Image (cartoon, rainbow, N blue to C red):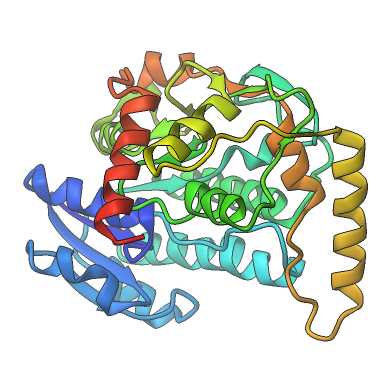
Length: 329
């Protein structure tokens, strides 16, 4: 089987492309940074550099592949709706059209549980529990992209979408690197009572879910799936576990939720008024993410994808820490 992985210069796309190569698949990869995929080309991946906004390039990428795993997209909490619409909706539409034009059989789309987030606590969210109103452009555009993927079934494309929560492991440059940097600057504090439980996903478990999505058949197709480790853990226990691996003091100070939220509002307001609209150090959305319970019901993935997370959160965190140390950070 020959597959295309978009976003292979990023964390999730790169890790899955490597996993697919190890499973014996022929893998074509796309990304913007050649230096970030050298480890994949050395293992036999075919690299085609370029921007997915180029529709001719997308058709070239999709030529002669049986399945596409679409991991590319715009992430973050700060930016215009136009920015996120381009990265998450327009590029996904281009990939869909490339799949249809080149008669690709299946598209596996990497979505996000940010589609659920409304600033409130949620436990055991099911796939259909999407709020009527989105609190940020990222979540809104990821949901629109999902809908575009599902609509492509009308034209014969087999589709699956995954919503993995807080993915970590070797290669994670987003979640814990940012928290470690905040801690080193003395800016990291527990928000609220510090007891909130959240889901994480080991990258190894996500690899299994993505690979299962390539092999799935029949009633498993045409669905969106929550993906996580299935066992929520106290967020600040996980943060302090990582800090201990680097001989850093644990986070013990608390900030009341209302104080943190007000500070985030002030941060965002000031940054909107400054030239260039720089990204604030504290977001309202980030405050809620760090203070609220948030977990997913993964029973649909267990039933249809035979998803059974084997790698614990703590093992995934150890994997991240060992990798981060090797990077000399």
